[in-house]
Length: 368
Image 1: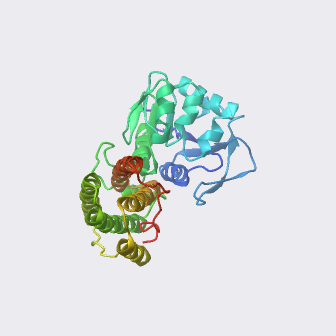
Image 2: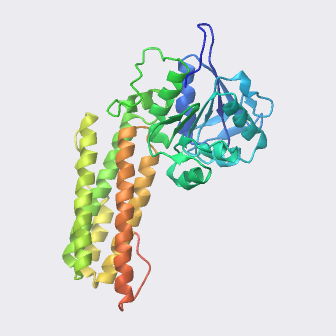
Protein backbone atom coordinates (compact mmCIF):
# COMPACT_ATOMS: atom_id res chain seq x y z
CA UNK A 1 0.00 0.00 0.00
CA UNK A 2 1.30 3.46 -0.84
CA UNK A 3 -0.25 6.87 -0.58
CA UNK A 4 -0.93 8.55 -3.93
CA UNK A 5 0.58 12.02 -3.72
CA UNK A 6 0.94 14.77 -6.26
CA UNK A 7 4.25 16.51 -6.71
CA UNK A 8 3.27 19.46 -4.51
CA UNK A 9 1.66 17.48 -1.68
CA UNK A 10 3.51 17.45 1.61
CA UNK A 11 2.57 14.27 3.50
CA UNK A 12 0.91 14.95 6.84
CA UNK A 13 1.64 12.35 9.48
CA UNK A 14 0.15 12.00 12.96
CA UNK A 15 2.28 10.41 15.68
CA UNK A 16 0.32 9.48 18.80
CA UNK A 17 1.82 10.29 22.19
CA UNK A 18 1.10 9.32 25.79
CA UNK A 19 3.00 8.97 29.05
CA UNK A 20 5.77 6.34 29.13
CA UNK A 21 6.08 6.03 25.36
CA UNK A 22 9.11 3.98 24.28
CA UNK A 23 11.52 6.85 23.59
CA UNK A 24 13.20 5.54 20.44
CA UNK A 25 9.89 4.40 18.96
CA UNK A 26 8.71 8.00 19.05
CA UNK A 27 11.97 9.76 18.24
CA UNK A 28 13.27 7.68 15.30
CA UNK A 29 10.21 7.96 13.01
CA UNK A 30 9.63 11.57 14.09
CA UNK A 31 13.21 12.53 13.19
CA UNK A 32 13.26 10.65 9.88
CA UNK A 33 9.90 12.00 8.70
CA UNK A 34 10.89 15.54 9.63
CA UNK A 35 14.17 15.21 7.72
CA UNK A 36 12.22 13.84 4.75
CA UNK A 37 10.02 16.94 4.66
CA UNK A 38 6.79 15.52 6.02
CA UNK A 39 4.51 17.62 8.22
CA UNK A 40 4.61 15.73 11.51
CA UNK A 41 1.83 16.41 14.00
CA UNK A 42 2.05 14.97 17.52
CA UNK A 43 -1.38 14.07 18.90
CA UNK A 44 -2.07 13.31 22.56
CA UNK A 45 -5.14 13.15 24.79
CA UNK A 46 -4.46 16.53 26.40
CA UNK A 47 -2.93 19.85 25.40
CA UNK A 48 -0.45 21.81 27.55
CA UNK A 49 1.02 18.65 29.02
CA UNK A 50 4.60 17.44 28.62
CA UNK A 51 4.74 13.71 27.95
CA UNK A 52 7.75 11.83 29.30
CA UNK A 53 9.34 8.83 27.62
CA UNK A 54 9.71 5.48 29.35
CA UNK A 55 13.52 5.77 29.30
CA UNK A 56 13.58 9.46 30.26
CA UNK A 57 15.09 10.49 26.90
CA UNK A 58 11.99 12.04 25.35
CA UNK A 59 9.94 14.94 26.67
CA UNK A 60 7.38 16.36 24.24
CA UNK A 61 4.23 18.44 24.14
CA UNK A 62 1.42 17.50 21.80
CA UNK A 63 0.60 19.73 18.83
CA UNK A 64 -3.06 18.80 19.14
CA UNK A 65 -5.37 16.14 20.54
CA UNK A 66 -7.18 13.20 19.04
CA UNK A 67 -10.41 14.86 20.14
CA UNK A 68 -10.36 17.66 17.56
CA UNK A 69 -8.11 15.96 14.98
CA UNK A 70 -9.70 14.32 11.94
CA UNK A 71 -8.20 11.22 10.33
CA UNK A 72 -9.10 12.51 6.86
CA UNK A 73 -6.60 15.35 7.32
CA UNK A 74 -3.64 12.93 7.54
CA UNK A 75 -1.88 10.58 5.17
CA UNK A 76 -0.57 8.29 7.92
CA UNK A 77 -0.87 7.55 11.63
CA UNK A 78 2.00 6.11 13.71
CA UNK A 79 1.45 4.37 17.04
CA UNK A 80 4.71 3.96 19.01
CA UNK A 81 5.00 1.44 21.82
CA UNK A 82 6.21 1.28 25.39
CA UNK A 83 3.61 1.66 28.12
CA UNK A 84 1.81 4.41 26.20
CA UNK A 85 -0.55 2.25 24.10
CA UNK A 86 -2.10 0.75 27.21
CA UNK A 87 -3.16 4.28 28.12
CA UNK A 88 -4.10 5.23 24.57
CA UNK A 89 -6.52 2.32 24.33
CA UNK A 90 -8.53 3.69 27.28
CA UNK A 91 -9.12 6.99 25.45
CA UNK A 92 -12.27 6.63 23.34
CA UNK A 93 -11.29 9.57 21.11
CA UNK A 94 -7.87 8.10 20.34
CA UNK A 95 -9.35 4.71 19.49
CA UNK A 96 -11.99 6.36 17.29
CA UNK A 97 -9.32 8.41 15.50
CA UNK A 98 -7.38 5.21 14.65
CA UNK A 99 -10.58 3.41 13.59
CA UNK A 100 -11.38 6.26 11.22
CA UNK A 101 -7.86 6.18 9.77
CA UNK A 102 -8.09 2.45 9.05
CA UNK A 103 -11.59 2.81 7.56
CA UNK A 104 -10.35 5.61 5.27
CA UNK A 105 -7.45 3.40 4.11
CA UNK A 106 -4.82 5.69 5.62
CA UNK A 107 -1.43 4.15 6.34
CA UNK A 108 -1.49 3.04 9.99
CA UNK A 109 1.89 1.95 11.40
CA UNK A 110 2.20 0.41 14.88
CA UNK A 111 5.28 -0.93 16.62
CA UNK A 112 5.93 -2.94 19.78
CA UNK A 113 2.85 -2.53 22.04
CA UNK A 114 1.24 -0.17 19.52
CA UNK A 115 -1.13 -2.89 18.22
CA UNK A 116 -2.95 -2.72 21.57
CA UNK A 117 -4.78 0.30 20.17
CA UNK A 118 -5.72 -1.71 17.06
CA UNK A 119 -6.98 -4.50 19.31
CA UNK A 120 -9.11 -2.06 21.29
CA UNK A 121 -10.62 -0.77 18.05
CA UNK A 122 -11.55 -4.29 16.84
CA UNK A 123 -9.38 -3.72 13.78
CA UNK A 124 -7.40 -6.97 13.55
CA UNK A 125 -9.90 -9.63 12.52
CA UNK A 126 -8.39 -11.60 9.64
CA UNK A 127 -5.26 -9.42 9.42
CA UNK A 128 -1.59 -10.44 9.44
CA UNK A 129 0.44 -8.37 11.89
CA UNK A 130 3.26 -8.46 14.40
CA UNK A 131 4.05 -6.75 17.69
CA UNK A 132 5.97 -7.20 20.92
CA UNK A 133 5.96 -10.89 21.82
CA UNK A 134 4.26 -10.30 25.17
CA UNK A 135 1.05 -9.29 23.34
CA UNK A 136 1.19 -12.19 20.86
CA UNK A 137 -1.77 -13.95 22.49
CA UNK A 138 -3.76 -10.71 22.61
CA UNK A 139 -3.18 -10.23 18.89
CA UNK A 140 -4.25 -13.80 18.13
CA UNK A 141 -7.32 -13.53 20.36
CA UNK A 142 -8.27 -10.39 18.41
CA UNK A 143 -8.51 -12.54 15.28
CA UNK A 144 -5.18 -11.75 13.64
CA UNK A 145 -2.37 -14.01 12.48
CA UNK A 146 0.77 -13.17 14.45
CA UNK A 147 3.93 -13.09 12.30
CA UNK A 148 7.29 -13.02 14.10
CA UNK A 149 9.13 -10.81 11.62
CA UNK A 150 10.70 -7.36 11.75
CA UNK A 151 8.16 -5.92 9.31
CA UNK A 152 4.67 -7.15 8.44
CA UNK A 153 2.49 -5.34 5.92
CA UNK A 154 -1.18 -6.17 5.38
CA UNK A 155 -2.97 -3.62 3.25
CA UNK A 156 -2.81 -0.28 5.04
CA UNK A 157 -1.51 -1.81 8.30
CA UNK A 158 2.27 -1.79 8.85
CA UNK A 159 3.61 -3.35 12.05
CA UNK A 160 6.95 -4.17 13.71
CA UNK A 161 7.97 -5.90 16.94
CA UNK A 162 10.48 -3.88 18.99
CA UNK A 163 13.01 -1.01 19.04
CA UNK A 164 15.49 -3.11 17.08
CA UNK A 165 13.11 -3.08 14.10
CA UNK A 166 12.86 0.72 14.00
CA UNK A 167 15.17 1.41 11.02
CA UNK A 168 13.22 -1.08 8.87
CA UNK A 169 9.85 0.11 10.23
CA UNK A 170 10.66 3.76 9.53
CA UNK A 171 12.07 3.05 6.08
CA UNK A 172 8.86 1.22 5.17
CA UNK A 173 6.80 4.24 6.25
CA UNK A 174 8.97 6.61 4.20
CA UNK A 175 8.69 4.36 1.14
CA UNK A 176 4.91 4.19 1.33
CA UNK A 177 4.65 7.95 1.64
CA UNK A 178 6.97 8.43 -1.32
CA UNK A 179 9.54 10.20 0.83
CA UNK A 180 13.33 10.27 0.76
CA UNK A 181 15.82 11.67 3.23
CA UNK A 182 18.46 13.99 1.73
CA UNK A 183 21.94 12.46 1.52
CA UNK A 184 20.62 9.11 2.80
CA UNK A 185 20.27 5.88 0.85
CA UNK A 186 17.42 3.72 2.09
CA UNK A 187 18.16 -0.02 1.86
CA UNK A 188 15.68 -2.56 0.52
CA UNK A 189 13.27 -3.40 3.32
CA UNK A 190 14.03 -7.14 3.13
CA UNK A 191 17.83 -6.73 3.07
CA UNK A 192 18.83 -8.29 6.39
CA UNK A 193 22.52 -7.54 5.81
CA UNK A 194 22.09 -3.81 5.27
CA UNK A 195 23.79 -1.52 7.77
CA UNK A 196 20.48 -0.65 9.44
CA UNK A 197 22.21 0.48 12.62
CA UNK A 198 23.54 3.50 10.71
CA UNK A 199 20.02 4.70 9.95
CA UNK A 200 19.03 4.05 13.56
CA UNK A 201 21.91 6.24 14.73
CA UNK A 202 21.19 8.95 12.13
CA UNK A 203 17.56 9.17 13.22
CA UNK A 204 18.22 9.37 16.97
CA UNK A 205 18.42 5.71 17.96
CA UNK A 206 21.32 3.84 19.52
CA UNK A 207 24.82 4.92 18.51
CA UNK A 208 27.57 2.61 17.33
CA UNK A 209 29.37 3.00 20.64
CA UNK A 210 26.20 2.01 22.51
CA UNK A 211 25.78 -1.06 20.31
CA UNK A 212 29.42 -2.08 20.84
CA UNK A 213 29.09 -1.52 24.59
CA UNK A 214 25.98 -3.72 24.73
CA UNK A 215 27.73 -6.48 22.79
CA UNK A 216 30.72 -6.37 25.13
CA UNK A 217 28.39 -6.46 28.12
CA UNK A 218 26.69 -9.52 26.66
CA UNK A 219 30.07 -11.11 25.96
CA UNK A 220 31.20 -10.55 29.53
CA UNK A 221 28.05 -12.19 30.86
CA UNK A 222 28.34 -15.21 28.57
CA UNK A 223 32.05 -15.68 29.35
CA UNK A 224 31.23 -15.64 33.04
CA UNK A 225 28.37 -18.08 32.42
CA UNK A 226 30.59 -20.40 30.43
CA UNK A 227 33.17 -20.57 33.22
CA UNK A 228 30.44 -21.03 35.84
CA UNK A 229 28.79 -23.95 34.06
CA UNK A 230 32.13 -25.59 33.36
CA UNK A 231 32.64 -25.59 37.14
CA UNK A 232 29.12 -26.86 37.75
CA UNK A 233 29.63 -29.74 35.32
CA UNK A 234 32.83 -30.74 37.12
CA UNK A 235 31.19 -30.66 40.56
CA UNK A 236 27.86 -32.30 39.71
CA UNK A 237 27.26 -35.94 40.64
CA UNK A 238 23.88 -36.36 38.90
CA UNK A 239 24.37 -37.53 35.29
CA UNK A 240 21.44 -35.54 33.90
CA UNK A 241 22.70 -32.39 35.58
CA UNK A 242 26.19 -32.90 34.16
CA UNK A 243 24.74 -33.37 30.68
CA UNK A 244 22.64 -30.21 31.02
CA UNK A 245 25.64 -28.17 32.16
CA UNK A 246 27.67 -29.48 29.25
CA UNK A 247 24.98 -28.48 26.76
CA UNK A 248 24.64 -25.03 28.35
CA UNK A 249 28.39 -24.56 27.96
CA UNK A 250 28.11 -25.38 24.25
CA UNK A 251 25.22 -22.94 23.96
CA UNK A 252 27.22 -20.15 25.60
CA UNK A 253 30.17 -20.83 23.31
CA UNK A 254 27.82 -20.34 20.36
CA UNK A 255 26.54 -17.07 21.85
CA UNK A 256 30.09 -15.84 22.31
CA UNK A 257 30.96 -16.68 18.69
CA UNK A 258 27.90 -14.80 17.37
CA UNK A 259 28.60 -11.72 19.49
CA UNK A 260 32.26 -11.69 18.49
CA UNK A 261 31.28 -12.03 14.83
CA UNK A 262 28.91 -9.07 15.18
CA UNK A 263 31.75 -6.97 16.60
CA UNK A 264 33.79 -7.93 13.55
CA UNK A 265 31.04 -6.79 11.17
CA UNK A 266 30.96 -3.46 13.01
CA UNK A 267 34.72 -3.16 12.53
CA UNK A 268 35.48 -3.47 16.22
CA UNK A 269 38.15 -5.68 17.74
CA UNK A 270 37.09 -8.43 20.11
CA UNK A 271 37.27 -7.32 23.72
CA UNK A 272 38.83 -9.75 26.15
CA UNK A 273 37.51 -7.94 29.18
CA UNK A 274 36.42 -10.22 31.98
CA UNK A 275 33.05 -10.09 33.62
CA UNK A 276 32.86 -8.24 36.93
CA UNK A 277 35.76 -9.38 39.06
CA UNK A 278 33.48 -9.51 42.07
CA UNK A 279 31.23 -12.02 40.31
CA UNK A 280 34.21 -14.24 39.46
CA UNK A 281 35.54 -14.05 43.01
CA UNK A 282 32.13 -15.01 44.38
CA UNK A 283 31.91 -17.91 41.93
CA UNK A 284 35.33 -19.27 42.87
CA UNK A 285 34.65 -18.98 46.58
CA UNK A 286 31.31 -20.72 46.14
CA UNK A 287 32.83 -23.55 44.07
CA UNK A 288 35.42 -24.22 46.77
CA UNK A 289 32.80 -24.43 49.51
CA UNK A 290 29.80 -25.90 47.64
CA UNK A 291 28.38 -29.24 48.57
CA UNK A 292 25.56 -31.26 47.01
CA UNK A 293 23.76 -31.08 43.67
CA UNK A 294 20.81 -29.22 45.17
CA UNK A 295 23.09 -26.34 46.18
CA UNK A 296 24.65 -26.38 42.73
CA UNK A 297 21.22 -26.29 41.07
CA UNK A 298 20.13 -23.29 43.11
CA UNK A 299 23.28 -21.45 42.07
CA UNK A 300 22.81 -22.42 38.40
CA UNK A 301 19.20 -21.23 38.46
CA UNK A 302 20.30 -17.88 39.85
CA UNK A 303 22.87 -17.51 37.07
CA UNK A 304 20.33 -18.32 34.37
CA UNK A 305 17.64 -16.06 35.81
CA UNK A 306 20.13 -13.19 35.86
CA UNK A 307 21.09 -14.00 32.26
CA UNK A 308 17.47 -13.88 31.05
CA UNK A 309 16.87 -10.46 32.60
CA UNK A 310 20.18 -9.00 31.45
CA UNK A 311 19.73 -10.22 27.88
CA UNK A 312 16.14 -8.93 27.76
CA UNK A 313 17.35 -5.49 28.81
CA UNK A 314 20.20 -5.48 26.29
CA UNK A 315 17.83 -6.48 23.49
CA UNK A 316 15.37 -3.68 24.17
CA UNK A 317 17.87 -0.81 24.36
CA UNK A 318 19.16 -1.01 20.77
CA UNK A 319 17.88 0.08 17.37
CA UNK A 320 20.21 -2.27 15.48
CA UNK A 321 18.20 -5.17 14.00
CA UNK A 322 21.13 -7.58 13.65
CA UNK A 323 22.45 -7.21 17.20
CA UNK A 324 18.93 -7.26 18.61
CA UNK A 325 18.24 -10.55 16.83
CA UNK A 326 21.26 -12.13 18.52
CA UNK A 327 20.12 -10.99 21.96
CA UNK A 328 16.57 -12.18 21.24
CA UNK A 329 17.84 -15.66 20.35
CA UNK A 330 20.07 -15.68 23.44
CA UNK A 331 17.15 -14.80 25.70
CA UNK A 332 15.12 -17.73 24.36
CA UNK A 333 18.07 -20.13 24.74
CA UNK A 334 18.81 -19.05 28.32
CA UNK A 335 15.12 -19.21 29.30
CA UNK A 336 14.89 -22.78 27.98
CA UNK A 337 18.04 -23.71 29.89
CA UNK A 338 16.51 -22.20 33.02
CA UNK A 339 13.44 -24.41 32.60
CA UNK A 340 15.59 -27.49 32.08
CA UNK A 341 17.64 -26.82 35.21
CA UNK A 342 14.41 -26.11 37.12
CA UNK A 343 12.99 -29.48 36.03
CA UNK A 344 16.13 -31.27 37.28
CA UNK A 345 15.96 -29.30 40.51
CA UNK A 346 12.33 -30.28 41.11
CA UNK A 347 13.10 -33.92 40.33
CA UNK A 348 16.01 -34.07 42.79
CA UNK A 349 14.10 -32.22 45.50
CA UNK A 350 11.20 -34.61 45.02
CA UNK A 351 13.51 -37.55 45.49
CA UNK A 352 14.56 -36.43 48.96
CA UNK A 353 16.51 -33.17 48.69
CA UNK A 354 15.80 -30.08 50.73
CA UNK A 355 14.48 -27.19 48.70
CA UNK A 356 15.57 -23.59 49.21
CA UNK A 357 14.95 -20.62 46.91
CA UNK A 358 17.47 -20.26 44.05
CA UNK A 359 20.22 -17.75 44.78
CA UNK A 360 20.69 -14.99 42.17
CA UNK A 361 24.19 -14.07 41.10
CA UNK A 362 25.76 -10.65 41.42
CA UNK A 363 24.62 -9.71 37.90
CA UNK A 364 27.82 -10.29 35.94
CA UNK A 365 26.43 -9.09 32.63
CA UNK A 366 24.88 -5.90 33.95
CA UNK A 367 27.95 -4.87 35.94
CA UNK A 368 30.53 -5.80 33.35
